[in-house]
Length: 93
Image 1: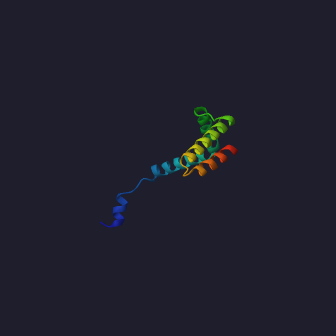
Image 2: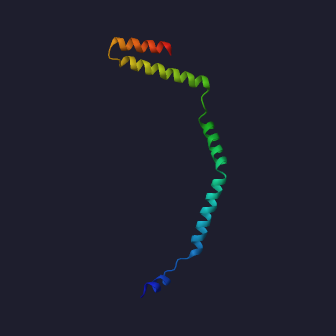
Image 3: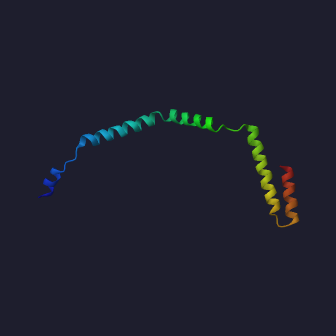
């Protein structure tokens, strides 16, 4: 049997393939058009599940983090002059 005859016997139906391709294209176009809406809904859901901290709370956490970092640096300082310098830096902050 020749390859042409073999190819004719094993024909692929194009109808279902075209339907799947058209469905995928329509889904992609819909997601592209409504992307801003979808992103907004997801961000609102995220805020409901995990509310954002207030500015005062964020500043307090940052200050606490800085204090902890300074304490770690002072504890890891090699000599008393390094510790004194770090304390002076911490006092200015």
